[in-house]
Image 1 (cartoon, rainbow, N blue to C red):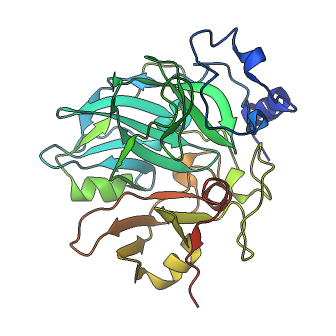
Image 2: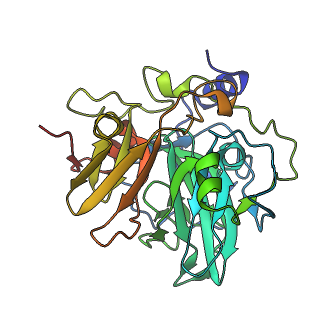
Length: 320
């Protein structure tokens, strides 16, 4: 069953295709004459309005050695930049806020998570326009979050990090190596690391508002092509560039070295999109991707339908 929140979103978004004429009242400073989107019908309302899902900025942190109330298998997004203290951003917060604008050392970053695509990416916020601050537009494209920047009011595709509407159309954010793992895995490796503390919002942190989503038959608010090779649209895949490895293959193998990268799977991370409580979700395991020198590689663990939607000519690394 879906939760009440998801049901409300479906009702609000049903048939809610839009176009610039209907958006200009809410977005008077967005330049809709500049876009890389060929068909405006690809962009639709996800239900909440602009900033209805409130992005976070300048979060506070606790030492990992403290007890912030996280379950050991709860997923976190890990950021370990050279010369800085490792940071964990719990999905229990990002599932309600989707974007965290932060600064690690002298680097401004945006930590992003789209629950409907399970896409978790970290971007450098520095661009030719200067340092940007991101918010949640309330729009979806191929069921993926459309972000916006507050400086130019341009719209950005979260899964690709590219501006798709507005003054900065075509600008590409630089993705940084980051990964999802369990809180216990982060804490064991980084006992002196930092974990984002609970935001000052009235949210049911630790609860999953998308209960049962990643075992659904079809993605929410997606009517595009489904993945090939009989891959279920909501199967997790590890995307590196324009290649995707099914998580089921990685789980069976434990480690695969192909196409210049080594991908390792270990158990211990709960799905954030399964049961009502995030820490009770089934074990989907954790992924780490490195290159031939052992350096972390930018990657994403996303649903198969989203990979196919944004990389329709991508390579499916199914083996055999």
